[in-house]
Length: 137
Image (cartoon, rainbow, N blue to C red; front, side, top):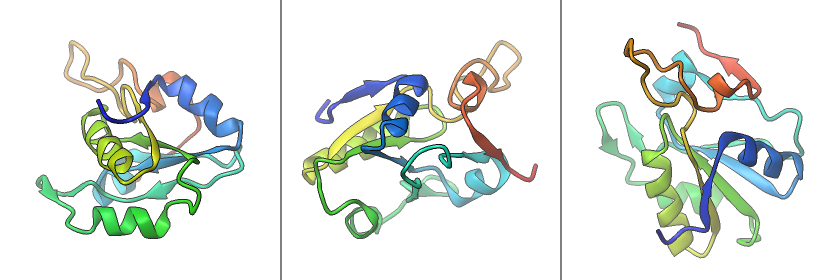
C-alpha cells in the first residue's frame, strides 16, 4: 500500500467534518446517477467526482489529469477515495499518493459488500447511515 491508509466510512466522515479533507468519488457516472452520491453539505468541502473507470470497466485515461486539475493545490490536503466497495478507490489512492497527494482509501465503499441475499445492504457509506443523495433507480 503506497497511500496513507484505510479509513472506515465513519472515520472518513470525521475527517470531512474537520474541514481538512476532500472526498473523491471514483465510481462511474452511472453509479452516481442511479445509486446515489455522498452528501457532504455538512462539511466545508464539496466532493470531487472523477471516475476511475467507465461503464464496462474501461479505464479512464484522463484520471491523473482530472485529479491534478480538480484536486487541491496543497497536496498535503487529505484526499479520501471512495468507490462501490473499496477496490477501485484503493487503486486510485495509490495513484494519488504516487503523485504526491496525501491519500486514503475508504473501506467498504459507498455500497459495501453483498449480503447473503446478494444485495449490497451490509455495510458501506450509505448503509452506515452517512449523508447520501440517493439515485434515481
